[in-house]
Length: 195
Ligand code: IMP
Ligand code: MG
Image 1: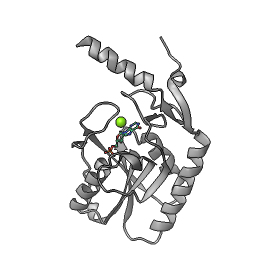
Image 2 (image 1 turned 30 degrees about the horizontal axis):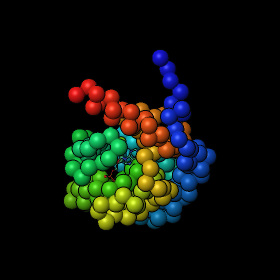
Image 3 (image 1 turned 120 degrees about the horizontal axis):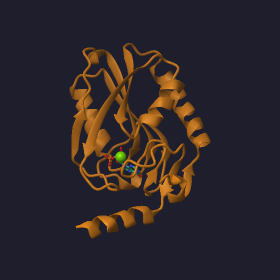
């Protein structure tokens, strides 16, 4: 009944150790950038993929932080994110005008999620809005968007682990790996067979 998920990984792209070191570096940059700012620093986790990164980042940042969560969905297939963003869990803060928000994301692909969310939070009246992503796939960009903090620029491959999923699986892996294409092509075949 239990399967070894690592069998579905073609290649480990980022080890736990590499990620830990980079998270520490990002945290130190955030500490420097915000230590003299007035207002509250809020790390805003975009559910669910960013949960693991968020947990490590909030511990590594030395400044006091508030945490919050939003959930958005983009319509599309499991390996291709589409342009339509829907807010499933919103942010409600009375003190938003006093908040410096850093949106914490797992990966930027088309750029639509973060570009939309940034504008949305600015319109809500945040004191400032910046973005922090663990992974960036610039080759797939459809809208012009550059994150303020980025962990690693990666090639155009579908990756899982350290919070990132394929159909909700693989989030618990402690590293980031490239998923074997046979995993999603065989799933598509099964889906088609059912129709
Ligand atoms: P964007 O709006 O196209 O930038 O979409 C970003 C979202 O697409 C991420 O938050 C992920 O949920 C998903 N995504 C994009 N690429 C990957 C990937 O390689 N692995 C897992 N999820 C991905
Ligand atoms: Mg996802």
